Length: 203
Length: 237
Image (cartoon, rainbow over all chains, first blue to last red; front, top):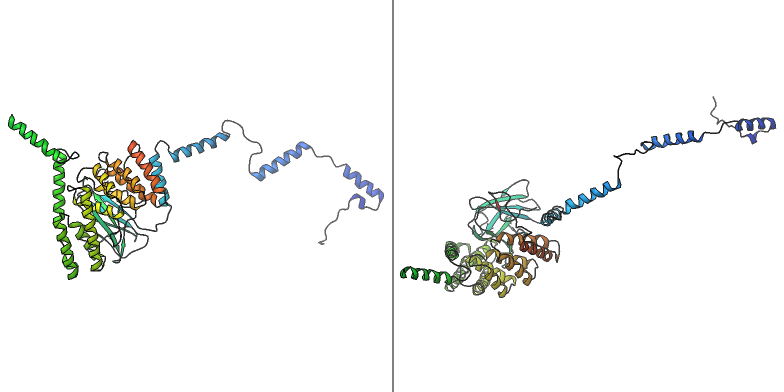
């Protein structure tokens, strides 16, 4: 057993002239490679390497450049919806707001049946208790406690309200007064802002 | 026949005395609104137990003064109770109530004797924001008695959010003149409020787009999602 690398000398390395001539003749006797055979081998190697057919398919199902253009046009038309601009704007508004993390309270008021109005409030942080105060309960923090809904940040209260204008605010943990930033606001009277709600009573 | 003619003439005279914007049945409705308003004003009693003695007596004097002037006392009592709930001092509460009394006095002069309590309160708030008397008069002219609360609330809010008073007046009065346009006005308020969060100029641009769409009829006001529920304001997104 030997681990020496085998060395095959070139014809010029042989000292014997006859041997040198015989080796050269043997090299020249090797047949020349067929170009077609070389091409077939190259194609097979490339096809295996690229996991793709060696020849491109042609026919009715082959991709066309205008397929991409048509898809892009449909996408633009469906998202911009030029025939319903207000809908597209509303969705854009929602997307803009939804993409932002909640950093300030969000509220909503819904008139329900029987002159009952539901107040919803989503807080950016958790709270122990939230109360609804306003001109309808004498600004009494204990009169209308809000009920915790899904999670610890969503609160709700139902209040029977007669038609008219009502002023209200939220009290968090008995010390922090909050307003809904998107609802109509009554200017600061000297204490802080409050919200205004108009109940039309048509429900 | 002569008797019937006199009755008809009397009815016409009465309906004209309500002003051009409140003919016939609308005048009766206005009386009903004012009656309900007065009842609501009388129902709200002053709870002196929530104030110290000195503050309570001063507030009583202010309320008496308001009654003598024919002004509603409910908005003043509300301001006082709000101050007590916020645990503010007696002197601060008295100052706020006095300021509101002055604003109510001015609002009554501008909006007229027939205005309801809610209209006077909303008008007083508008004056506090800095809205001038001419603008309040324009809003008053766009709606009959008892129906100007929503325009006044929306006007106050959008001016507070940075819309110039002249632009806000044009927008609110032009929409308020349309029949059954309270929902459209509240939609305007929501649009301005949302866009004012995006930066200066955005609220104004949104207001212009909204008014153009509403007046041309291409933009409908927010509609109730179902029959049994009516949104006073769209929910949070």
